[in-house]
Structures are given as C-alpha cells and as structure tokens.
Image (cartoon, rainbow, N blue to C red; front, top):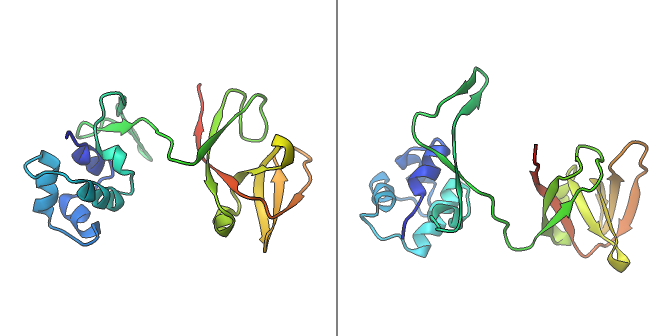
Amino acid sequence: MITRIREVRRAKGLTLAEVGVRCDPPTTAQTIGRLETGTRTVSVDWLNRIADALGVDAADLVQLPERADLPVAALLCADGASAPRHEQVVAAPAPEAGTVAIMVEASVGDYRAGDAVWCRRVAPDDFGAALNRDVLVPRPAGRYVFGRLIGRQGARIQILPLGAGAKQQIFDDPAWLGVAMRLVRDF
C-alpha cells in the first residue's frame, strides 16, 4: 500500500515526534517514520490513528490511482507568496458519507452563480454546533430553505435567509440540517 503520511504530515507542518504524541495511544517518532517509509506495514488501525492525529480522513493518507493530487506551487503568508521547502500536494476533495450539495444558479449573499456548496448532514442533537453557520433546512414537498442559523430553542430553530431584506423564519423540529462545509467555485 502506498501511503501519503509524510506528505500530509509535512503539509500540516508537524514533526514525526508531534504526530507520535498526538496518536491515541501515543507512539514514537521512529514508529511514525517507519510507517511513512513503508519499512513497517501500515494496517487500517494505524491509518485511522495517524489520520486522527493529523486531523484528516484515513482515505487522505492512501494514494489511490484514480484520485488526483494537486501540487502545491506556493505558500501564502503575511509576507507574501513563497515556494514550499519540500514538495507538497493537496488531496483533491472527496465527499464524506452523508454529504449533500447545493448548486447556486443565481448569486445570493456570498454565493455566486455556478458555485457548489457542500453540506454535511447533522441530526437535531448537533444543531447547536451549527449556530452562525449557513445551513440547508429540508421542508415538506421537496422544498428547502438556505440561510444562516441564528438561534435555537429546543426543537425550534431560527433561520435568516440570504439576501438583502430577508426576514427571519422559524422552523419546528426539522429532521436534519445540512451545514455548509465547503465552497467549490470556478473562477
């Protein structure tokens, strides 16, 4: 199995020792190094442990032939753009299970026509974590409302639709919310 542990670790700016300490349970820098170079077999358990330590999905640590990686040409800092010290790649985004998309047909709020907004579906118990985020609210008969979640009281949520002059809408007990997680925009 070809892994991308080293590339992802470097892209995150972490040392072998830092990743080892972040693993649960912690491990040594030498073990992480052996897993990166392939001198030690990488099991699914190790992939999951290292992915958690790096804050990525386990799939991001495996090089799949059908998945394109984007080479990092420059790093943008407060001082300007500069070349990375080591070769780096960014994994092309892959939707996680339960992700839904919104295709923007007409510009509204911060979104432009042609944008795709990826939303992670969350259950009512997790609505509080979506406060002040853009959310998709399912409605009866295949309708939806998209706007900012501005309040929650028990099973009741308050949404401020996007666009000038929009008025707050209140919904009782929606089955789920789609929390905006990723904006895909062609320039």
